[in-house]
Image (cartoon, rainbow, N blue to C red; front, side, top):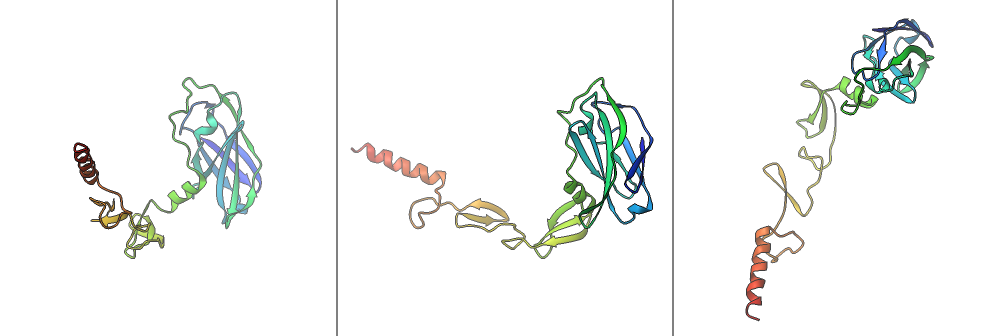
Length: 208
């Protein structure tokens, strides 16, 4: 495990480990902070060459080094951390050198899922599912606890309006189709209606 200590804007490496390219979810990094960081939302940033990835740090101050920065051997791995308050960067550290990325025996990243963006990580920390509330609003839930909700258009728990060519049957959105051209000729015809019209035309052609 990598162990790092942030003293205000300085980031000191207290423990290193050997890193190989192609590794996924095997290297942990633990950050500790001085009192300067109290009350700040902390985000770790890792980079190697031209690649970089960020990870939100929870209460433990630990995270896994994203695999995206471990795909290229022969470059040095670096780490930094910054603290925010109300969405504004308040305190960034200098970069700390975590060592050389050695060539792994089986590197490859094609089948690896990407590390979530910061907003996805934040959403995952705050709630685990979306659903409609009893009032028909779209809500964010943590388990069964409602964390917040927003109104949606259309009402009735549907985030859309039902147009002229659509209808809702037993909770399912379907096409509002007709079987002939009589009445409302702005609606689409069913296959049965088209087949009937084509059959009538073929019958008429035989009399010509």
